[in-house]
Image 1 (cartoon, rainbow, N blue to C red):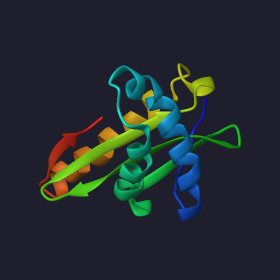
Image 2: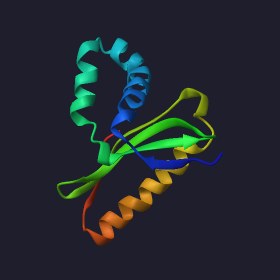
Image 3: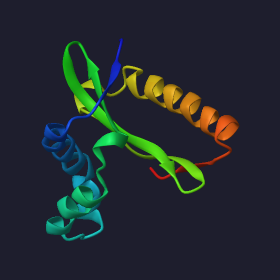
Length: 116
């Protein structure tokens, strides 16, 4: 399945937040986390210039966040709607990220920092 990464717009936050909270529900429950703190944490860390929306079949199906931080290139989030998991989209997106990170290491002399 073909997927495209497009730059996020500020109005994509609601889509990203909904998917983020849905995918973390089991973690929130298992670890007895305070649900009310999860959205403010995402709002604080969600930087529109670092977010890419993953689209497939003409619709938004996921999102990722990556970019430079201090002396590292990082990937902090990657989420896909459940209906689009297991179709190779995540693998393809991670492949693109690996190329971006390799460029960061070689050209900008940065470390790779994966925070997933």
